[in-house]
Image 1: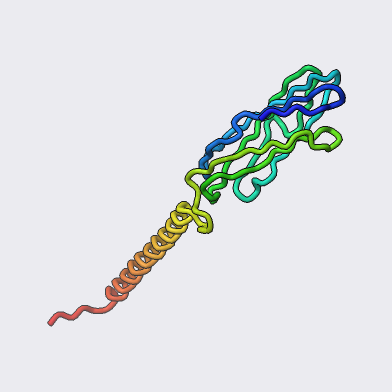
Image 2: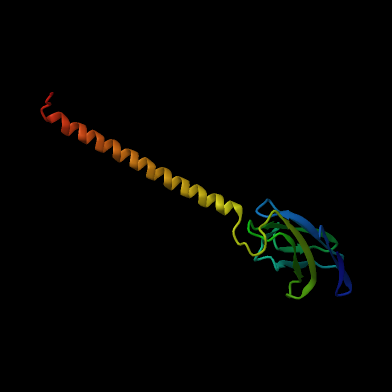
Length: 171
């Protein structure tokens, strides 16, 4: 998406590549590059924020969510998005707001992410959680078995020691 907004008499150009990308739930994530061109005669500062991702993804901007773009300079800010492990499969839309230093929205970019390998909507728990619960239960059962074996051996030794002190009679 390309947008040119008036900033004084000069046009600020904001472009985003990869507006729709596939991302694996619980995986490494994807990168959306947002490029800002400032043809004006003075430096401008822009602030980037993502909306509509809190429930299904985590985002961060690199090198920062604030970019100072000097006159005639092109600057790229990368948005890293990773879908949460319990994110529902399917297409999710979110927006990236680009604001000037006065807090005015210069551009609102609509982005999309197609989540693959996530949970079905409404299930709320994924296979990894089941495996974690199963592992914890297995460890608890093994500890209980180890304690049973330990106490039975200790009881067997105590009975042997008691039996040694008594006189043995043979018939």
